Image 1: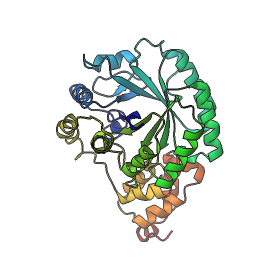
Image 2 (image 1 turned 135 degrees about the horizontal axis):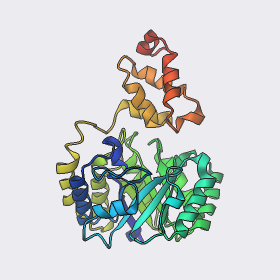
Image 3 (image 1 turned 90 degrees about the vertical axis):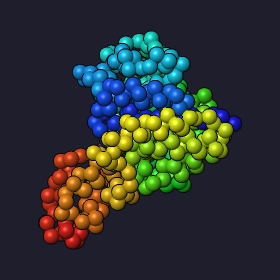
Image 4 (image 1 turned 90 degrees about the horizontal axis):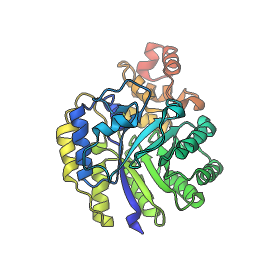
Length: 342
């Protein structure tokens, strides 16, 4: 049953970390139109946030903001907006009127109880919801089982396995998938969202695709892998793989047009892709902004970056804490930073 696979392109949301979501209004509309033309199944358009809306950014204060950006031929396409739990009051979200627009709710492990209550209330407003726990690999097998049971109570449209730090091995991704797949209601789709710090996004996605034979599966990706740090799974690569191996009918040409006209001009200013700093961040299971912070210190050696990342307490690794890493960095002498002898 391999026709159950769908692609969710999140270029305008997760890709926005590379350019602070300033794509420009004209480019946002062109990207949306080309994604629709590519036959991608779901398009994530950005974040819902309590902000003053700027039509040049993919940060939206309400659904009406998004509707102004959608092309006329979009009524049959599924769109999503992501909500960082704790940022948007449930009372500020009106009841659902547009059933082609869904919400994805992302939350930290410590927020799980309140976040799931939020998801339940949002669903009661009539919205299709996707539930995205950050750092899924930080949950034990027992915790994953308990989480699946909570999902079965809420019955979201999809539950996401999230490789937030881009550190999942193929074995780890498969173990997490099998645990969730075994305990999650068959009516709930599984989604896989990865980051490419270890250059494993594509191979891990293939592993889960080939393991998922009897459930709807959604694979997250971005055009040209656009995203923070090492970036994401490339939409054009996963489309071609599914066309070649699973009889899909994605149109790659509109994706190439996006790369050529909208994405390529951004890349030289804020490049993303493989770097040894983000590799070190991944193997130390740290938020990528720790690596970004340290790599901007020009005098620091790679060995020192690795040692400094190891000094971050486990409970602080998954969430970036600038004051903490600044303090750890400041406690080391200049000579030790250059030599890496910490």
